[in-house]
Length: 172
Length: 184
Image (tube, rainbow over all chains, first blue to last red):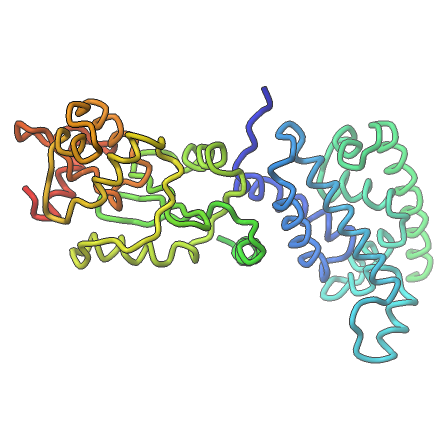
């Protein structure tokens, strides 16, 4: 028999913080809460059909899709914008352009570098280091093998190291 | 409860996705959990049961789409509070009967719901009002499985000999409620 689904409230309380951390890494802190609400509304809609055995991977799959949709709509300039300057700003910059607001310069530079990563690598790096999942769990959440997850994290880190070196060079 | 969860529950409710909303309230008998579907009050849980278990049962027996959302229970909470303050004798809440067995059990509970504040009837009376005068034992089981105690006042059904009989929350709780109603 299938394992019984926990009440949605319990599911929500268990996964809220890790999914929030994931979305902050994917779209930046300013947009994370919008994506977070969309993620859990979508999860609630589909919840009765979910499989109790693998809810974590399931909710991260939804969150990743929401983050990607969000980035696409941003880069297409579909968001309501007030003036031309804002449009230019949005189309020219990497997805979480405002990621650094309210952060230390160093922190904000790391966000910006993470934002430059291709989506698959970014998701893997964020899940591994911001959400603290194991490689097997990263793979489950992203629909890749454990090996694939390891490779994505490795490639992502390599690029981040390069950015960090450039940053150091620039701020010297 | 965090703002985020509250806003999420409000949105879920607006979009028709919140099948079961629950809230907890402190009363003179302890912490009571109340839960409502879109149709009405579906469950009142007397003190002593763990919230986790209650939510698990609701997930299994009604729907897994269960969230804390006290706003849907505003009216129920208000009426219960008035009841415990001795300021209300009748509940005027829509009820969702789905957690009681249809048939004789539900007829017993519906008949019990009509017993007025301050009065008591016997298990035999309850059986009779449900259409089977000799089924007083089954009436006792029906009352014991009452998913909406207090509001469906199974505490107003007592033994013929003067003993107050069993209660889900224990006989002391039953006595407390009957004394609150000046029925003893």
